[in-house]
Length: 308
Image 1: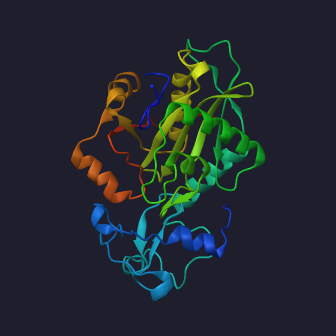
Image 2: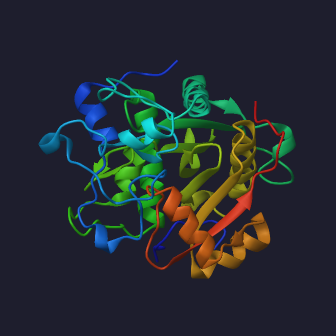
């Protein structure tokens, strides 16, 4: 049986410039039906009100989105708070702070590095006889080699999860996240895939997004059927947690199905957030993934650890 929701099926368990069109699609986010979502359009004024670029032109009510933390800002609010004084839509990537710019560059460097050996200190007593490596790949603007790895990860997700279909487009959200595409205004260009390999084979893969230094989300993670029960997921999680620590990310959040909440909490140290805390997350990070029938879990990322 396939699983619905972001759970591990083992334990159950410098910047690149965009084109003008990409910049427009990336920076301007329009909510088709605001009344259905308890979200905000601007993190500074906490208002839904916005203007449509193609109709109203570029003005103070245009909403621009940071290419790393994906937090939304009115152009006018940025100016009023003396953060930015934008006269037009930036032609390439845009970041709300130098910290987000640095974080974006650090993640890009990790993608370019390719495969790295899993440190012996993270192997523990699990999968000790295998040649384990980790790497980060990105669906958007990926290489042919990384696309092959994404295809393998997509097969694992396909076996481990029921498709999560967007009601408007009838497209699978998991595939959109895997390959960094857009569905009905939801832009998954910032989603990356953290992969654990044994030799040439992808054994465990997880889709993640670093929403600034405050939080990273891990909405989808799974281990290939033939590799389950061998401890690979524990190795994956140790590596991923250390990666977040190296990037100075404070918290990890995981939306989990009810039947695996105890696993995440007891084995990996996460805790279930309160409804108030979840609402605060969704208010600040409006792009955060929330699947029906799941609860949001969180964990503070240990400080001062490195994967490289």
